[in-house]
Length: 109
Image (cartoon, rainbow, N blue to C red; front, side, top):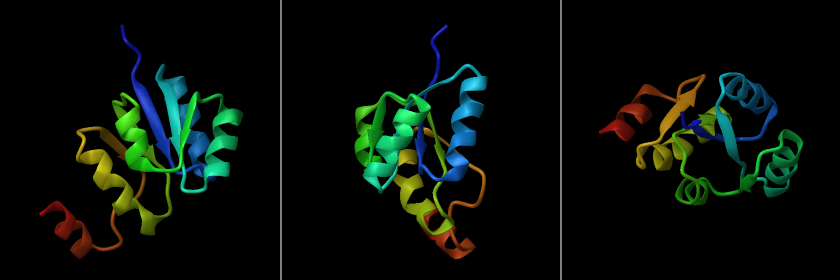
């Protein structure tokens, strides 16, 4: 059976929990992404993830991902979710993806 390929967007403190949760489920974390390229690179090394990116669109265009975990601050989620969802990749978010219902409805329409 093929192992799912997952990416992590946002390399802050909660991201490490997502990496280990995915791995404990038998899923391969193949890429991480953060706008801070040095943070993305250092976390990829620490977590033994083969690829790192500082641009979400570039990551989802370059990797054959089935899902991503979005671990960004609330005000950055909507901009991150859109390019991922538009490519048909499953998105895991612990919190709302928009800062207001109005913004969420506007994006969904």
